[in-house]
Length: 435
Image (cartoon, rainbow, N blue to C red; front, side):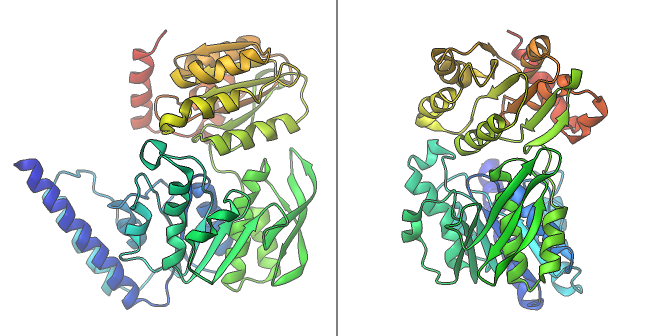
């Protein structure tokens, strides 16, 4: 009975918050909303967009994954999520704060909001109350496959946002052209690192210490802008290209686009290059993992010169029935002439990725937790080694393997999930998975 009442109250609160968002934009039509969705790359893209627009506009951005149905309205309005989610009084205070935002003078010009999809219909549901000025769709690749089942269903879900947005921008590299059938919005542009996209980056060179140098090109600036994007890997350059395209839609000048692109940096856990022990370098890509992101990370890893390569691969979560196939595909990317050690974390990586890499002739070692994996990597690393660490969030926590390999433990503040709450969760998990 009590749970039923709680659910009914939650539905009422959700409706009131959505109504508050609608009223907020009606009261402040000058405020523009940019939303970012997609299978991978949402957080990097929203951060890049905010970095670009903040040069000329007051921008509101929630830095966490505040992208669920209950949290999105609060993030948009700038109202803190209540600490006690089971308190009726706390939610009443939240509703009052949301209504106060409607009447108060606005403190922003642009709101950049991430939208997440865990189940079919999630993205379409946001259209009940959101009317974005621009929507950015980063990818349509395998995610939450236990619910979506097919990649077509994923694409239809993610692209639903384009049809209730004024302008739409999609990643041409990571969204197959056949999925255009799901888009009815004629105000559509594409971005990417390949020339098939309208807004794209023509790479001229790459240096580990500086990033990708080249020319940003768009239909409204065909002569292009010479720029260096200080990130690692083509898939991390794409969020920057999206940001530049959004910037142009907002009227930023070429000088702004150039300075904005050069100001963009990797977010923690996204192909962030850190100093390792004994002259080694560690590519920290531990924020999360999916097949597309893992492929891109390995390709970038192979493009970098090093006397020894060691890879730490955690299980990819939320793949449902496709987990065995997707892990096997990643395992088949490893060859003994390209990587010296393949180290896995988690059950699916051990069951599917490790045998595929071993069949290719690689040295493979599997562990249940990241601390053990990091200790083993430390024992086999040679001077000047290059290490790639990639893993999902739940029950993998590959950032704890990276921590063991750092030259300066002060750099641990650049790793993901280091709050006291996260550390307590991880310690409990590691205690249960010692073998």
